[in-house]
Length: 121
Image 1 (cartoon, rainbow, N blue to C red):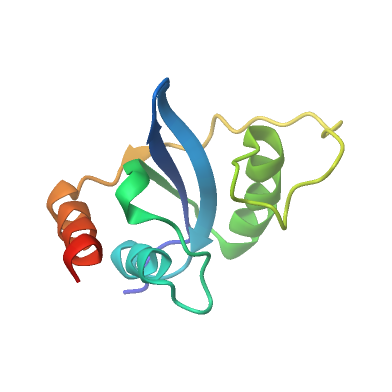
Image 2 (cartoon, one colour):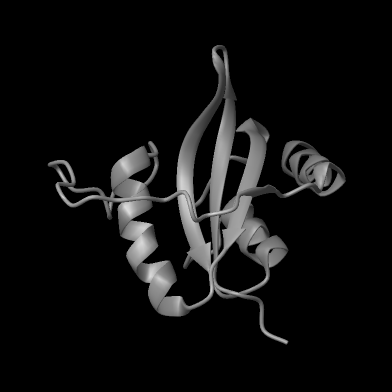
């Protein structure tokens, strides 16, 4: 069974607390997508796994929903590392993103393993 279209938010640990740095989307397995981000896969934005403090995700019903919501989320939340999809001006249409049910990607042992591989590898 194919995974549902999914959004994810990646946070870095900063002195003032968690800081949203990236919003992504995928129709594939989340673990594979994150591994690609952290190992510098050509087709994904490279992110520094050592800074990751938290990852959240939300599933959507359709791919069309995913594409529309991506632009809205990036322009509302303005994550630092999403540069390609940010508009220079603000949204003027009414937007409600409350329908997204965010869950924590709870695999701290895997994140720790990736961090150790990067630091010792």
